[in-house]
Amino acid sequence: MKWFIPAKTFLLGEYVAITGGSAILLTTAPYFELSLNDGIDTSPIHPLSPAGKWWSKSQSEGTFLGWNDPYNERGGLGASSAQFLGTYWATCHLHQNIPDEHSMLEAYYQSSWSGKGLRPSGYDVIAQARKGCVYINNQKNMVQSYHWPFDDLSFLILHTGVKLATHQHLMQTTLPTQINEMSNLVDEAKQAFEQQDSAQLIDAINKYHQILSSLNLVAEHSLNMINTLKSNPEIKAIKGCGALGADTLLILTRRQNLETLRKKIEHEGWTVLASEADLTC
Image (tube, rainbow, N blue to C red):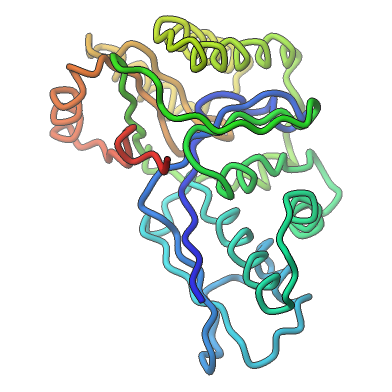
């Protein structure tokens, strides 16, 4: 058996997600792959990772996990949560249990949180179990998947070349004071999806970045990269994604400028990971 799990990127909602507030995540190809194998007794999954901890509880003797990461261990794309999700599905398959979101989340919290610091939101595993652009608000028990509805707007996801250990960051950080304002911006972006209002999405992303920056929640290297990229007139919005915006950057540009901008920034040495053409819906 083999399971295919997309990469994830926070469009909006970093830190808000930890409180159970609103977030939107993009799920993109290429896919991570987790497989069940017989007779291969060396697992590429670390035993102390969330997936490794969950697998050790499963009592699946004689069955081993295989793993393929098309991103070659670049951070920020949800490899750890994809490993966990695939492992959860694999154990359900082996024990003939029907997967469900509630038990999956409980299993994830048990496996990913020591009780110290902020508990991971679990939004990454929720999104990666679905498709497209995924809006999540746990406080309201809402999960909604969208296609990319903006005919005139494209996105690019870039890698910074840096990998941040999110679980360590969550052990050391505290929640921002402007959580409600940040959550409201995510809801404005959700409304932009529903009304196909690209200007509203651009505004929400730029304002969200400004708040993160004002709270010192953007890593210095990412902030420098963002300020450098802003000089491109084709870029309408830009922000770091995930913890401290350290691993990936999201850019919005007009659809007609996408290929020109992509070629320009790739020529400058940036690694482009995905665009809306890679969304999983």
